Image 1: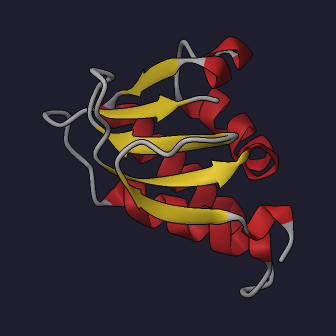
Image 2 (image 1 turned 90 degrees about the vertical axis):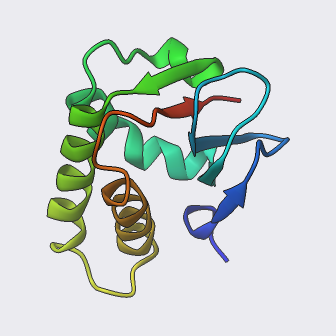
Amino acid sequence: MSVIEEFHFTDGLVAGDVIQFADGRWRGVAGAGIAMTEESFDLVEPHLRAAAPGWTADHRYGVFELKAHARQELAKRLLAEAVTLPETEAKALLFKALAAWLAQRPDGWKPVSVFGI
């Protein structure tokens, strides 16, 4: 398995060298989410930077709340690139999984955070 394929769905905060998208704000508890290696996140980050005003590289070492509009934009960008890749390529699978997870959270009443390493 390549490092790009190393992502998984989570329930709660995951320890270790991962970056995690999860329901909720940082208060010591994270909800359902998707965690990935830093190498996988390196592929996602350019799309996140374009979709989320205020995102900086420093946020990969802390917590960043992803607003509803940014979630929708990120999902759109990930899917736009995923359809240009072979369907079974690891990068396409990662982008589709994260986009689908984000698409299930379209409104702004429930926050989504990016928890860095």
